[in-house]
Length: 370
Ligand code: AOF
Ligand code: ZN
Image 1 (cartoon, helix red, strand yellow):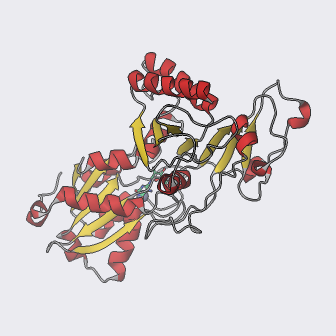
Image 2 (tube, protein in one colour; image 1 turned 90 degrees about the horizontal axis):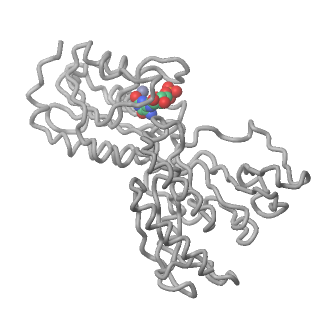
Image 3 (cartoon, rainbow, N blue to C red; image 1 turned 30 degrees about the vertical axis):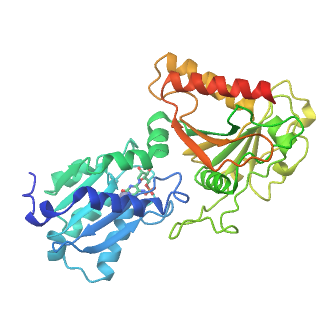
């Protein structure tokens, strides 16, 4: 039976408190994979914050567990909890095989809370069912509060759990006339410092970064993070526990040397085909590769980006529920290839064939222009 709604809670600005919980959750964005980033705030009957928490890393306390621990350490009584309202961005987890921490639904029931707002349900089939468990225990549960913001923030996690494939972000730095580089390599910096900082954060929120062998050989990118050196970590955010895995598509085995093969900086996974000479095959210890890629960032070059987009168009045309091979485009726009500085960027979801076709045209032109 649903508990009677406590009058205090109906007075509160539910959407506003959920926005606050989303802000808390973002502090874990770079560090929680393969888990989702989640935030939780418990608001007392008088409208003040009793406790809050966010999930920082797999194996550590979940957002709800962190908030409940904070409430205990502040001496919050179960009477105060009974009058409080709890906001959590993701459905509290339920007992399931392979869980590494205690289930949050049971902890919430034991806390004495009577009212809980959940923004979105957990699509992870192993740990869903928390909302039903809370209701069965007499807690008044509202699902959908602030859902729009959480759907946007948690998209990589939600996509990965639903589609069993990473959320793929294509990053393209392009001039307004559609060039992504010059033959002599002088256009390395289409982007200005602001856009490059943004791209660093994009790398940090990805668990893998992919390039083609052309980019690997010509640009010799390190594809590593320089967040702390450059003071790019937003205040209060937890740093990524590991550098993203570097992935190189190297069909013909051209990657014989270079910075990407220095695996002291980050692990590198090289995909070759039978067309590669035997001596190009490299040994990788699979145990050194972190698992759980929620977000994959594709950094180029033109042929690889074009390949992802072409495959995307085909999948979209076939009506695939999970969309194409890529889900988002980050397009950094600079004025000209030489000495230009992109300080603006466009983030576009690749959910329609129209968008993909448009971008395909752009990158095809770009390839011809280089
Ligand atoms: C929550 N709150 O803050 C998070 C949840 O191995 P575990 O114990 O960390 O459980 C992992 C699963 O818990 C993860 O796959 C997802 O379904 C859920 N994440 N749930 O109640 C949180 N991060
Ligand atoms: Zn949990």
